[in-house]
Length: 283
Image 1 (cartoon, rainbow, N blue to C red):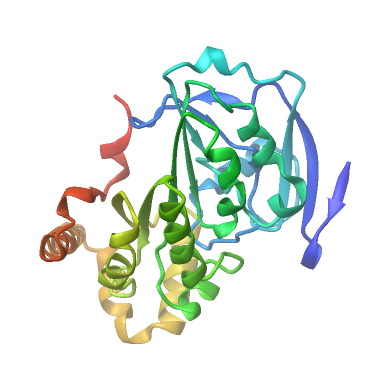
Image 2 (cartoon, rainbow, N blue to C red):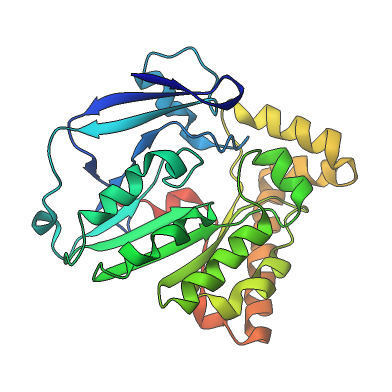
């Protein structure tokens, strides 16, 4: 079955053998991706590689495949295991408001002994706080890489606003849900990471940070967007991705700057920085 969404977007239901798959990420044992594709339409999305596994001629960011599994989740199988929702999609993208797919998955883990972690760019996750409270171990991360409406609309067209995401962190904290802000991706000379930290550090248990990796087909597009919309930083921005030595110097400076700022605020113990993907993969 195919459902047509806004602006020509489509949602298609597909059969999946198993919703839960083993992960090579160090902080989790398994991942659940309720959807294939994502209408957040982030211009830097690394998950575009998923498209080659499915026959569809739609542009990435303009379709969603909803996974349907014939087998029910057996939560006892994942006792003391860490499960991340999601790694190559957003479990709370717009269609979740209608489909409730992620909510139904969470319901399977009520009173289970699995450790559930959710990473999203959406404030919609607060809708499911009632379910999260019934799961023995939960943690929610909100990704924020851009602190202005202009930047969000340019690079993350259909994502929630900065204000919505920071408010979601406050709500999660007030409701007793362990949470973290994931300052990612950090756009060189564009992301005001100090503002993000200042606006969130009192409302989170952890602060994570990650750099913008530019590779593959989207590198050219991002550079073009920066050139046309942030011309005053374009030369320095592009140098980060064309000069290897400058790249290393720049990210070291940013890391030190973040650490010093967190030290000033008294939240250094909350900080964890992942500036290169190769450092966070399992051996």
